[in-house]
Image 1 (cartoon, helix red, strand yellow):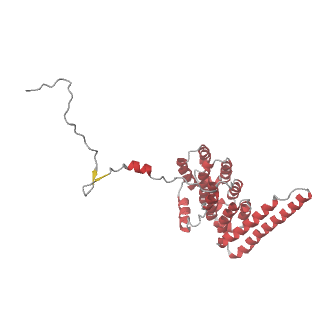
Image 2 (cartoon, one colour; image 1 turned 135 degrees about the vertical axis):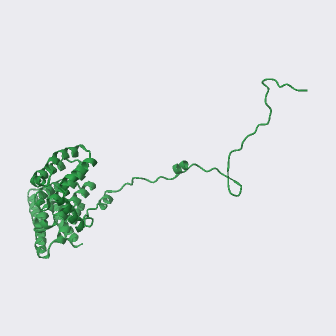
Image 3 (cartoon, helix red, strand yellow; image 1 turned 180 degrees about the horizontal axis):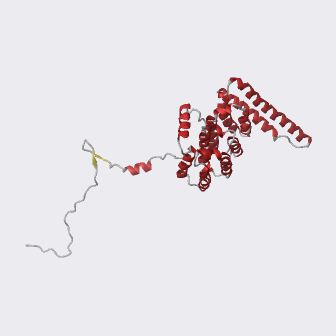
Length: 303
C-alpha cells in the first residue's frame, strides 16, 4: 500500500554535510589553509619610521661642505648662463620658490622683492636695498622661509659677482651672525652652507684682503658653543687654503693678534670685576672660545 505522507511530517532522509575545504599537497595529503597576506602583514613586526636622534647625532649629520659639490666647471657654467640670460638668476630662483613655498612670510617677501630684481640693472642698482630687505625678513624669525631666502642670497651673488662685495655681502653676513641659533641644527646647516656658497662665488675679491671677512666671522669663531665655532672654522678654512703664500703670513698674524687682543681685554675686564667685588667669569669663556675658534680654523685650513 501507498503510504500517504502527512503534511508537516518530519523529513527523516539522511543529511549530507560537507567537510571543510582543505588544500591538498602534491602527495595527496591535506594541509592547513593558508592565511591571508593581510593578516600575516599585521602580525609581522613593524619597523619604526621615525627614530629619535640626540642633539649630538643631529650635529654630526650637519653637512656644510659645498666646495666638493660645486665644481669649478659647474660654477663657471652657472655664471656664464646667468650672464647670458635676460632674466636674472635671482628672479628665476624667486619664481621657483613661489611655487614651492606658500608660507605667509615668504609670500610677503616675494611681493616686496620682485620689483627690485626684474632685470640685472635693477639688481645692481638696488643691491643695498635688497640687503636691507633680506636682513629685515631674516630677523622676523620664520623658519619656514629661511631656506628660500638664503638661496636667493646665493643667487644674488651669482648675478652681482664682484659687485656683491663688500656690500651687500658684509651686512648680510653680520645679520646671519646675529641670528645664529645653536640649538637649531637645520638653520645652522642652511646658514653655513650659504656662507660656503658665498665664499665660493666671491673667492677672488675676498682673497684681496682676508682680514675683512675674518673680522666678520670673528663672532662666529668666538661663539660660546663649540659646534658653531667648528662650522665657522670649516667654512672659512676654504679661504685660507686658497690664500696666496705671500699673503698668508699677514693673515695668520692678524688672526693671532685678534686672539691675543681678546685675551688681553678679557684679563682687564676680569681685573676690573675683581676690583668691584664681582665675579669675573663672564669674559673668560669668551676668550677661551675665540682662541679655540682660531685653533679650529688653523686645523681646518691644514685639512
